[in-house]
Image (cartoon, rainbow, N blue to C red; front, side, top):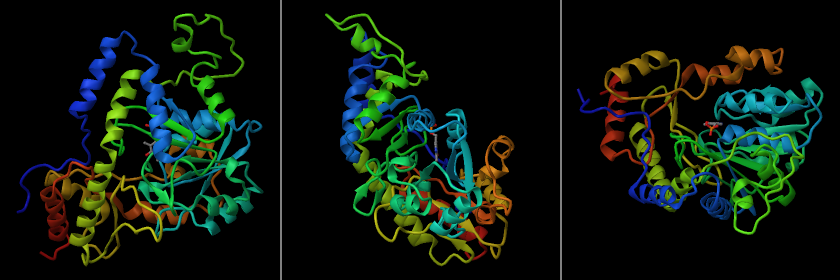
Length: 386
Ligand SMILES: *Cc1c(COP(=O)(O)O)cnc(C)c1O
């Protein structure tokens, strides 16, 4: 049997540059949001081609802040895919709005324009939409907005998987009103926890800067500087969702190696593609027709003809020390979401079909070629061929 050593689903590597940057911050006497966060905001905004970045405690908090900043009436409807992480629907509801779930194309796991038009017709219109670049695969944001009858100023992107994704020739982060990134432990740029909202709308960015910190007109960093005044006002309803300088220092170091990490992710995806090509009843992740995939996930689809169903495949891989995950349990199968989201009467059959067979293979930039080969050998063996 090929199994030699465990291959975990994903590992977080915080390198030596990040560690010395953290030391520098810890010794500086200022550890919460300050100069490091400001630098990280500027560098990430530059990377994606937006004019502003607003560092926040998580992508989920960023989504909630961005949705609140749209200033929509209470209970206004916000369209989102049912096939994504649960947090985005919670953010919509916590912003006082109503999530409307839309089905996906079973081949791509992303809503088609027809899916979007059908969902909008059924509820009689939506006020905004959250677009997710699932797994890092680019979604045509403009086409999705048009299908929903919305301008791009009423679209917020959940780009938790999409730092490095390009839609056509454009990096995700500069397309819609606001784009929310995650630096959670398993994401392509990992800090552990953290997020960033990028936007090219200055007023919108200023609102986010206040509302990420209780709605205060000036944060502590600015009030405590020599010569600065101590007064502030609170004119907005805010959250406590700022990013610390300790986290920002890690993020800046990770951003410096991000290009190399992404190149390695592309090479790993290509190796999986080459080794798994021809394995019967396993469908490989689709390649974008144009643009660039950020390869956050490498999810294959177990078709009904495969010798074992998806759940058994996960157990067999796990017995060989190979970690996997499932992205995602569709939201219309989660208790809270059924109670708080609008779910079409016809159900969401495309997402159900995806959920039946999808499994995400081990994937991070630190996988070795041997790791990939071991996973592929196990799949061929279970597939009954070799
Ligand atoms: C991880 C993830 C989030 C949440 O990110 P946090 O930074 O943990 O809040 C949101 N959406 C998707 C698609 C995710 O995978």
